[in-house]
Structures are given as C-alpha cells and as structure tokens.
Image (cartoon, rainbow, N blue to C red; front, side):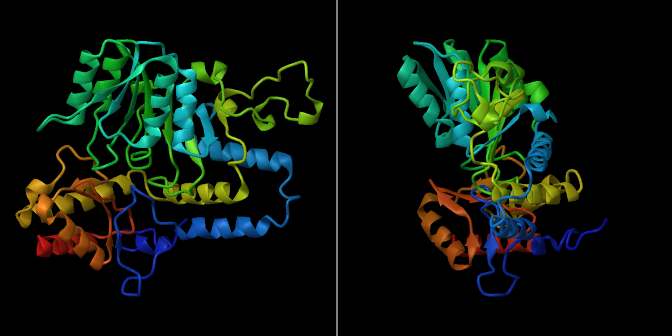
Length: 391
C-alpha cells in the first residue's frame, strides 16, 4: 500500500511543520532535543483527547490487547522480545529502576562519561551517596575518542561494578563503540546500563552482543513519539526478580485489586511488565506512539539511517569545501553531530543561524546539528552558507 509523501524529497509534508516559504518555516535541526511531530501522531493525539469523553470505551480486554501490540512494536527496536519491555515516563525513571536493582556496595564505583546527560547520572550519584560508593569518570584526552577513554577507565578502576553509558554522546554525537566496550566490561563482571535516547530509532541496538542489564530510551527523539512515554528494556534475570519503583495493581498478575488478600503479596505480571509505571499508558500517549511506530515501519528498513547519513555527509563536505573542516566532530555518529567554530566566533555564528531561522542547540562551544527526514540537502547547504558568512 502506498502512502502520501513517503518518498525522498517530500518527507517534510509528513511532519507538522509549516510549508517551505511560509512564515515560521525555517530549518529545524534539533531532533536530538525533540523531534518535530508527525501529522499522524498529532491527529492521533487529538482523537485520543476527543475520545476521553467516552471513558467506557474501549473495554478492558481490547485495551490490554492494544497495550501488548504497542509493547511488541517497542521490542522491535531492541531484541524483539516483548516480555523485556516496560513503559515508563522518562529515561530518568528507567535509570532509577536500574540503580535501585543493581548491586552496589561501599567502595565500589559506577562509570560515567565526563559531562554525561543528567538522566543517566543523577540516580547513580544518589545511589553512590546512599551506599558509600563513588562515581568514576571517563574523560577524553586531546585527540582521543570516547571508546578509548572508556576502555582506559575500565583498566584504571578495578572497583567498577556498573557502567552507565550512551551509544552516542548527547552533546556532539561522538560515537561509542559498544561492540568493544561491552565485552571489556563483562570480562570484569561489570553490569552495563545503556541510555539510548540519542540513538534508538537511528542506529541498531545489538542487545545480544552488548548483554546489558537495563536499557532506557525516551520516545520523543529518534522514535518520533510523544513526551511522557519512554521505554525500559530489562535483562531476563531482572524480569524475574526485579523490584519496581511503583507498586500498583496494573503491574500485578491478579489485577482485580478489590479482591486482593491483604495478607498475601500478589505476583507480578510476567516479564518486564513488573516495571511498567502507573498512568503512562493513557490513550493520548499510546495513540501518538502507535502512529509514530506505524510511520517508522512504513519507511523501508534502513531508509531513515541512510538519509540521515547522507545529510551529515553533505554537512561534512560543505564544511570541508569552505575551509571549515576542522570544525567537525571526529568519530561522530551517522545521524547527528557537533560543529565547533573558533571560540571567538561561536556566539556570532549561533546568532546568525538563529536569525536565519535555523534551529539547533548551541551549547558549550558546539552547534549540535540533528536533522530528521524533514530536512533536505538544500537545508544543510543553507546552514553551511550561513555559518561560513558569519565566521
């Protein structure tokens, strides 16, 4: 079945963005902060709000079946095992779940990256404070990539018990080689917790090779879904005996809460469902998630990553052609990157991009360029022209 605007060059029409040339159109290059909304997701959200006036529909079995279909869709981004997936409100919630379950004792350490995003840092800081453990930090030296920095930190910290890492560094898209890092951690008995918020939906996740204990991802970046609905993947042992943050009836096997025996603790539902957060699977968020997943599935396998790679390659080529090649991020991910102008020109270039209605994150000396399929190579060329004119 064909769908309108599902071909290269007309993808922008699928997103809830002003048509080119209209007021407010511009170029949005900040998917790493929040993806632009798909029109189908918007429409699903509106329909869900309208349907909220009919709380007697759907019936419980129909709703449960719908939730499980969504769980299977989410599982496809990991290892295809629906029992491994829990729905949570945020990546931070998922990381807190991991921090509350993984063993950590006084004198042991949790490895993070220098400048790690708070969602995969704060829970570990709190846990270390409570048990008397500490944070070990992997820092890049000049000319060093994150993979070497992490491998060096593993060697330097024999007391490591947990490594909490991303696949792509949130600030500038620098890539970590988890294929090399994960075996080095497992050889030392170190548990791996991954925050894939900046890669899931754009890069494959090799769960079988990496063997993480927990994986989290928000749904509103590269998965194009709504805020407030994130994904938590749990390894088999935690699906069987993990402790959830919340204790609510819908995560229990006998969900007729009014029949619970106060003297008997009811069993959890099977798999990672024990970690499902209460209240996150409302019709609005679930409807928007389903619509986004439907569109991602309509695009051919690899179509999103290949288009994003072409855009970033065009950016690199444009920077090289303008004598700005040294601004590029070495070892960047294929779907987003950081551009680092000379410090003395950073503010002027960021201001020029803003004036040209080119939206990106400008932080700590880097311009984060994170397009999605609504962006064309002409948009990227225009971005390079604006930067070059302001340098």
